[in-house]
Image (cartoon, rainbow, N blue to C red):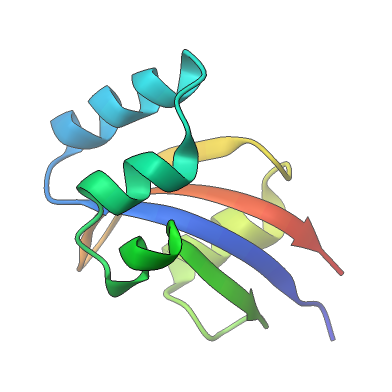
Amino acid sequence: MAKECARHILLKTKEEAEKIKQQLAKGGDFAKLAKKHSTCSSAKRGGDLGEFAPGKMLKAFDNVVFKKPVLKVHGPVKTKFGYHLIETIYRT
């Protein structure tokens, strides 16, 4: 079964997400930005969600981590929790 490892930054608004994405594009440190801005409990781990299989996350989230290119920041991806910036670290 496929598994992947991802990290994310969860934000309340699309505008916030776009602002952080611009900082990442300019070379901002993902883990530091996650610790400072993410509203998810994963923030203290730099946004690291660890390894998981398909179906463990929301569909919109799965669509990014299992289908989009690895080691690129995708988003903002809207879910019921807010707006995510998602980076897949690896896929097995």
